[in-house]
Length: 486
Image 1 (cartoon, rainbow, N blue to C red):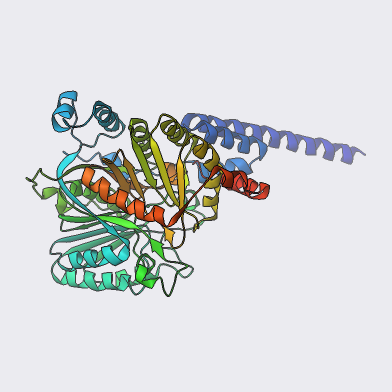
Image 2 (image 1 turned 60 degrees about the vertical axis):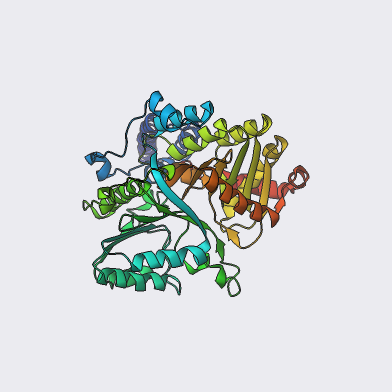
C-alpha cells in the first residue's frame, strides 16, 4: 500500500511539473507570437494551436511560424542611388499629365517602398515560350559580359536544352553567367536534373535558394524565391512570371495538353534593369554568401522618351507586404476600370472588400482566372465569388490549357506585372518582384490580350455560385483554411 501511495504521489508530481512546463512554454510562445505577428487572424490561430495542442502547437510554430530569413545583403545596407526621394513638386513636374488621384497614389506608393520611377524604358510583352524563348536565347548567345538568371522553375527538357547551348556560346564570348533556381520550384523525385547540366558548363556559376535538408530546413519550406529575372549584359532584361520549361511552349499542346501552360513575360530595355539587377545581387549574396555587383548599374542612360517604371521587390524579410499594399492602393485609386488576370486568386479580406467597393462605386472590375488549376487549394477561390459578383465584379474563367499569366491594369494606364499571384503565399511568404509602369500603349496591348482570353472564357454568374453543392462549398471553405498566413 505505501508503494502504491508513493507511486501515486510521484505520478502526480511529474504531471504537475509537466503541466507547469507546458503552461510556461505556451505562455512564452504566445508572447513571441504577440510581439512578432502583425496579422490578427494569424496570431489568434497560432495561439489557439499552441494552447489546444500541448507541445505539438509550440513545435509547429517554432518550425513553421517564425520567419528566420535574415539577409546579409540587407544587413550590409549597400549604398545605392536607385532609391531617390520624391517631393510633391517633383511629382507634379514629372507626372504633370496625370490626374490628382494618381499623383496621390504615387506619393502613397513611394511611402510604401522608396524606389523611384525611372524614365526611358521600352517594354514589350511576349506571350508564351514560343515568343519569349527565341528572343531570350538569341540575347544570351550575343552576350559578351554577363548573363543573370533567376527562375522559380528551370526544367531540363527539349526547350531548356537550347538555353544550355546558348550558355556555352555566351561563355565562349567571355560572358560570366550566374543562375539562381529555387529548391522547391525545380525539385523532382530524383533531384534537380538541371543542376547537373549547369555544373558541366565552364564559366557558369549557379545557386540553389534555400536547399532542402530535412529537418533543418523545414521552417523554410514556405519561403520560396518565386522571382523570374533574366538580364543580359546589363542592357536587355526579361521580367515577369514565366518559368523555363517546355510546358510554356504551346507548340507542345498537341502532345501534352494536360501540362501545357499559357503565360506572359516582358522584354525590357532601359534603366529599370538597374533596379532588377539590385534584386538579383541581393538574392545571389544571400544564397552564395559572395558579394556581387552587376555591370548593369555602370550603364549610363540618356534617353528619357520611354516609359516611366519602377521595380518593386517583396518578401518575408520586408517590414510590410509591399506588393499587396501597392495593389490595394491601385484598387482604391481606380476611377474607370480594373483588370486582373491571375492563376491564383486567394487574397485576404482587405483586397476582396476593396474590389467590392470599387465595383459598387461604378468602377468596371474584371477578373480572369483559369477554370482548371494545377493546385487543389485554388478551388477555394470559388468561396469568394458570390460576394464579388453581387457587388458588380465580373469573373471570367478560362479553359485548358492552364493560364499562368499575371496582369494588373488600372484605368487603361497603370500596369503592374511580375511574379506575384493574388494570394497570401505571394503577398506574405514568397520572395517576389513586380514592375509598376505608367503607359497607355502597354495597357492597351494587355487589354487586347485580356479581350482574347474573355472570348474563350465563361462568365461566372450568381446563379452558378448559388447552385454549388453543399459538399463543394464545404470543400472550398476547408481549402481556404489551408491558405498559409505565415
